[in-house]
Amino acid sequence: ALAQDLATQLKAADPRAQFRIAKVDWERASVGKNAWTDDPAALPAQVQNVSGYGSRLWEALADAARHSPTVIALVTDGQATDANEQVISEPPALPLAVVQAGPPAVVIGVGEVDTAMLQRLGQAGRLGAFTAATRDEAIQAVLAALRDNPPPPYRLSYRAPDGSGSAPRAVRVFERYGAARRPGKTLLAEARY
Image (cartoon, rainbow, N blue to C red; front, side):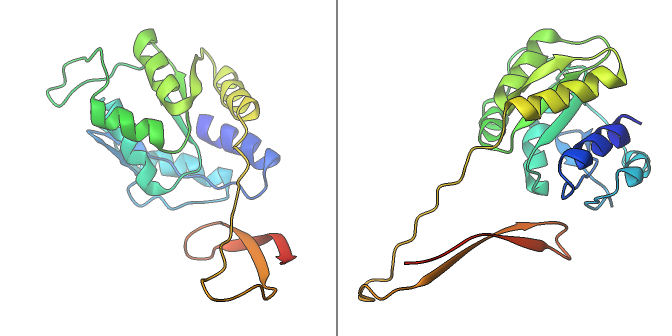
């Protein structure tokens, strides 16, 4: 119910929002057969479709970027382990670097939380870490993290091909969004130079 309720709130804020459930599965963010969906009601079934084992949180959070999200919400107890299932106190260097360079992530701690590791995950993900005792607290924490950290504006530049002179040219900038099979696009800017 957390996933569906959170997605419903996010969908209200941005009707183009899409969602996909992944679970930590050893060192991967496993999505199984779950596809991107714009229907929050489809998420409870996605939660059931995927099994996850292990707590290699850093590797799984780093791996989540391969699914092309624009933001990640990780719900965890923050108790990260290594390949031998030993609790770790410091993140592995490579997954840490990938998380820091990847899509922003907000981390929600539930249950008996390893606060220090939760904070490290949230700091690396750039959207922060929060503990939540209830579903509503978790939803509000994610919404606040997204509201307080809007995506940076894009700065685009265009360089005319060498030898093309100063002839005017039309430039159109589109934003692509949506599922990979049927992407949509929105014209963001159009100009003649």
